[in-house]
Every structure is written in structure tokens, then in C-alpha cells.
Image 1 (cartoon, one colour):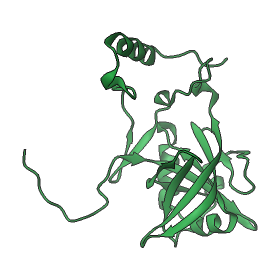
Image 2 (cartoon, rainbow, N blue to C red):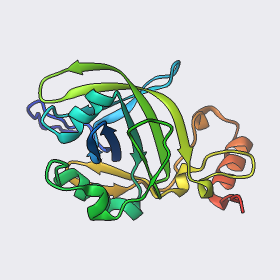
Image 3 (cartoon, rainbow, N blue to C red):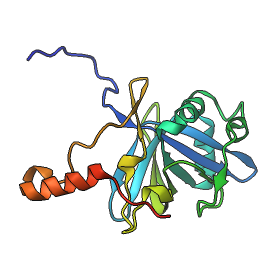
Length: 205
């Protein structure tokens, strides 16, 4: 198999496409679409987001020391795109999009209603990398939409229609191909687990 060599660039994809909400005292809250994000630590649970210093949200997060991350889903693709191309300096995105909010457990950053998850974070550190600043946030609270949980308390994000971002394209995450450890699982265990995944679940009433 032959390969073509390209110059170094941000080629890793697809990436999660998330909506980050933030706010600060005396400033209206904002929502920013971010694709450069990921889990970075287990104990304590932490994640990262990369934000350009000139973005309106950058100053809000620095001032308040908090932000919320909402994994995007197919029902909110237009919201994700709008919040990625419009600046909070020019438009109140919450009013423009009719976004409703919930209590996130933080003082300034609101949770946004309807998204599959809201992950509330407190800013732990900032690393200035160049074009972007890397914000490290400690996860302090997680809100999961009830229809994505079963009666045993398990979360079923495979049912959420999550969206990934791949070099300018929004793509819905596809079918389940396996589960962690499936390559070494016994055949009967593999078949049982996959059957349960594909057959669905009973959500809370």
C-alpha cells in the first residue's frame, strides 16, 4: 500500500464536536463550538478544550474559572454550526437560537437544555500553545438526559446520535462495532453483549 507524505497539520479526525457554555460576572453567557477536546485524566476526572485567545469565550472562562461541555448530537447540528461561526461579541447566541438553560452546579456557566450530556468543569490550568490556549478543566458534575439511561443506571450514549467533526464536515457517529475488550472476550460473551447493545434498552418512564 502506498502513502503520500503531507506537511504537518491538524489531520487527526474525526473529533468530538461539543458545545461549550461559559459566563462571567457582568457579561452575558456564551456558547462556543469546539472540536479540539478530550479526556486527559481519570483521578481526578479532567478534560481539555482548546480555544483561540481572541474568541469571546476565552475571556469568560479566564474570568470565571468554569465552563460546561455538551457533546453534540444530530438534533443540534445547526446550533453547533451557528455557535462555531458567530462570535459572542456580536450576537447573544442564547437569544438568537432560543436556547434554554438548566442549573449546571456552577455559578456562571449554564447547562444547555436538550443536549445528551452536560459536563460541568472548573478550570485547573491554562497552557498557551500558540494559535490556541489549552484549558484543563476538572469535571465536577455530569448531567445525563434521562432517556439515555436504563433502569440499572447505565448510560447509553450509542443511542444519542452523537456528532463528530472531520475536517469541515459534521458526521453522525455510526453503528456499534464492538465493546471494550471484545477482541479477547469469549464468543458467547461477545454475542450476548452485542445482542443486548443492538436490541435497545428500557428507558426510565
